[in-house]
Length: 252
Image (tube, rainbow, N blue to C red; front, side, top):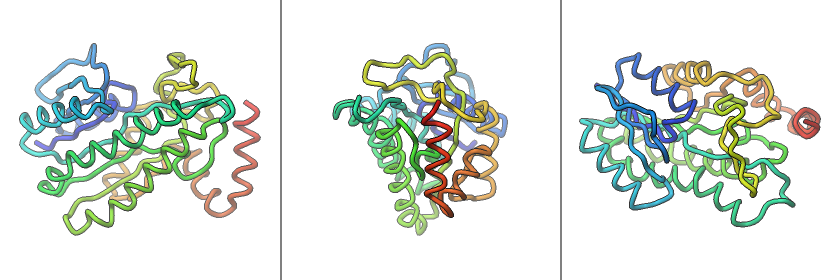
């Protein structure tokens, strides 16, 4: 039985990916800060873990490896957003976004690198439209997702000789936490809770698109109509993309 490890596995998209993979006959290991209400079954194991804490991450990785014969897919889904103007943010909040969105994923990738090489498996980074294009009131978030994409795109070349694939999924707006932003004074909030989203997708619909992209071996998987349009428009006419983004998001 193949095994996937999903960070942020107790959240909306993590749960949707977990359910879809289990339907395909996979076992899943879900890592999240809180796993209350997530039941362990024959094909699902939940581990509470603060991914930014090296000791907790090491324990979670060891527990995962002890219970699984192989690790065939690691999904880097954990993350937070920050919705505010740069002039309203500070260095501490900017670093907080990077610690969760970027550095935790890098540490997790390093920890599972030998297991993925052994299985000739795959890394799957959940990025965002903000990973390849600008996004209003998301300076720290966009920067962290740009960094995430740069890391995994570079890792792709290093891991190809080992038979390991690297995929990046770039959703636009996935409604994973509507009405549950739990927004903090520094502007950080749960992902998928923005009130200025456009053409939002359900987590289940996003999970289907992501797994279809994996099946087809796509290195970059735009998720949703807005993501596909943004990908092409930002590549071909970046100034027009920025103007449209500012008109639709900046005025929200």
